[in-house]
Structure formats: structure tokens, C-alpha cells
Image 1 (tube, helix red, strand yellow):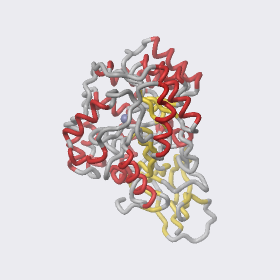
Image 2: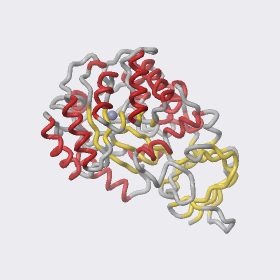
Image 3: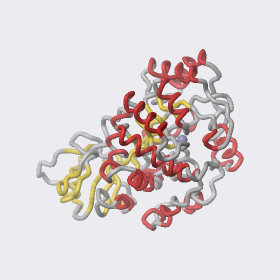
Image 4: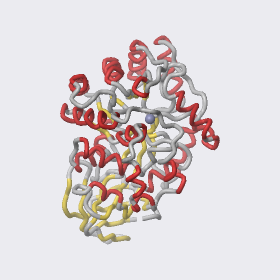
Length: 405
Ligand SMILES: [Zn+2]
């Protein structure tokens, strides 16, 4: 099967080609040799991008399908219980109408540490989540790090997620892993060949994680006000250590009670693809944690400081059972990244080539011959108006065009 997208603008994951042809041959992108094709699509006035990669999500039933409908062809899950993970992974392997998945599986946190309080709230609120919520393994001291990592490897994780968060940014006082435990987990993870990603909320926690040697942070910090020299210092430290940071600005916007996220579901291009319960989730989220409204401003400035210091930013939404929304919220994250600091092309790279590089996904994230045909075709030019990513004309996963264009 050969499909040609003719005369289309291409954002290839790194740069823009104003007008060219893109050939999809079976499950791969191929060089166009001028030979006959089975299907031809007029790309005039349209832009084709690599399928988007959301570098921070939490999967549950139905969500990989919703993600794909919005052009998110790969989700990097950051906490998922074993039976749920096994089911979602099977789905992603067997079917082409859901997004692909990588996962941290069960994250490493102290007994009753974050996110136990959210899990409890959500389990009580929504019984139908089944095995997406429930009790999970925790870690109490550094001596358990190796066994903890081995148990996760047996569950088939792709990277290790470590929580360094005492809840203080949310006005809570939660048990938290000590720096020695974090360091032991990073060491055990690296020894097993796993990348290590830390959940942090504050500058202090981020510093602990970076000093322990993590490869990435799962959120930008949001406790320090704009201009705080501590953020500049953190950014310089992250840059020097080659640490990447996942943005999750839409999550921070949601948990700080920001109303900006409502803009997304008022956009008909987004709303028309969402089930009613997902639109309602933006309004009432039982898992929401109270955070100071200044958090989203702090987060945007932290993203700016990180970007200026040369720290790679990866677009991530923290899509979960409620809000942010799988798939849809990526189309909010990108405008927020641009408001904070990035050009549209830089923002698009944070959702394509940059996460592919940092998570070792060498078969995707770019448009080039031999790459997986995970593609998003949109009307208009998102390299000028980022919201054009919402004007979805077609989505391909592994070369399979989705029925809903
Ligand atoms: Zn998360």
C-alpha cells in the first residue's frame, strides 16, 4: 500500500520544508520515486508532522484510542499498575487504532508518599477505573532499591520513575524518599539499563533529583516566583548534567485552578472529537490538588529559564483519568510552551524529535525515509499558528490511516 501526500508543507521534527511530497509505504515513510501510488492526498494548504509524542501520561482503558484521535501516536506513561499496563501494552502492540505506549509502570515513592493521596481520592470517586487504581509497591530505604527495580523489570517497564515530592507545593506534608534512597534507585536503574525520571514540584526536590543523577524531570518546578535566582541555578545545574525536563504546563494550569484550560474544550475542533464525559472532566476533577494560583506563572518562568540555559524541554501533559485530557491536552500544552518561551517550531520539536531522542525511540519523531509512518496531517500551518495542530485532517499510526479524519 502506497499513499502519497502531495504538495504538502512538512515539519520533519526539526525544521520545516515549505512544499514537498511524503510517501507512506506500508508501515514506513519512504523515498518517493515517482512510481504509481494507491492513494493520493492533496496536501495543498496543509502541514504534515510526525505523530505527536506525549512525554507524560497515565493510561487507562480507552485513553490510547482517545490520544490517537488527536494525533498523539505515542504516550510515555509515567505511572501505571501492572495488570493495567499489561493490558494497555497488549492493545498497543496488537491494534493500530490506539496510540503506542512506553511506561514507567509502578513509580518509586515512600510508603504513603505522593501520589497515594490522589489514588485514594480517585479510587473513591470512580469505581469503574478498576485496576487503574489500587495499592502498589513502595520503597522505605536505600537497601530495597535493587529489589524494587528488579520487581519493575519483571513487570516490563521501559524506564524508572522516582517521586521526590513532600507535597509542600500543594500545602501538604507527605512522606518523601530521602536523597540516599533516590540515589540508590538511580544507581539500580542505571545498572539495569533504565533511564530514570523524577517527579518533582519544587526547586529543592529537583535539586535532590539532579544531584542523585536522574536523566530527566517529569515536571517543571512551580514553587519559585519569576526571577528567583534559585531557578536560574537549577537550570544551569540541569544543563551541565544533561538533564531533560518534561513541561506539563497544562497539568500545572489545571491543578492551580487555572481557567485557561477551558479554552481548549471550547474550541470546536477539539470538542467535536471528545466524548461528553471528557469535556465535563475539565470542570470537575476529584483528583485535583490545591496549588497556589501563581503556580502556572512560576512554571512558565521556570520553563523559560530552563530553555535559556539549554535544557531540553519535552512536551508532556500529565493526562490522567480526568484532566488534562489524553490527546486533546497536547493541543493546549503546545500553545502554553509558546507563551512561555518557545517558537512554534521549537514547540513542535518538543512533541516529536526531542522526546524520541531522549527516550531512545529511534524509529519515530521525525519524517524521513525509513521512519515509522506515524503521522499527523493538519489544515493550515502550525509553524505560524500553533493551534492549527487542532485542525486534524488525518492521522496515521504505523502507516494505518485512522477512519476518523
Ligand atoms: Zn503524572
